[in-house]
Image (cartoon, rainbow, N blue to C red; front, top):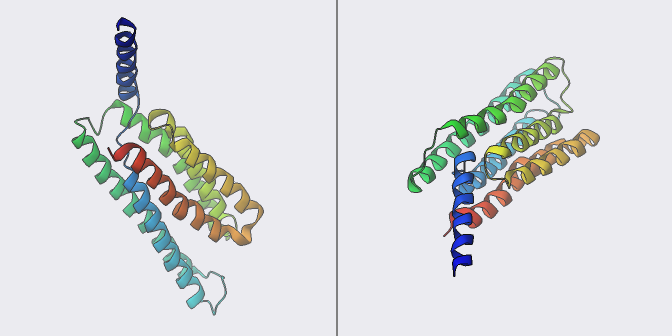
Length: 202
């Protein structure tokens, strides 16, 4: 009996330490919705490129700006949805949404993401479009892995997958668009579903 109580105390201490050092209010549903937004955005981008480029996948300046706006809206909707659902989950579990741990999470997530975004903008300004999808996947994957130290550890596996898909996309630039759809769309939905049933559904 004393042994069971001792193990229970250790488990409770471990849980408290995890809660204090990791942001655990990430919502699996936000991953599902982010993947859905990505699929919708990809469909819009594909239509913009093919419908206005005589059936080819060539980009001119005007279409390129529309596609970039489309991707920016996908990112904005995903970020707002993630914040809203995570805040709701934190409130439901009576934990703080914004504290030292969540700040570290955001900082570690943004460092690779912002650096990658700036690099992508630089190469795009030079008219090099072929590696965009692969670079987005790689830097996003690095951001997830970097942030996983301060959140649910499972997100690092999604990060690894995004990095691998990005590397494949750089080797096969002709498939970059579809690998982007797989990484940001389908993988987010799969990951979000797993996280939702693993952590959110009780």
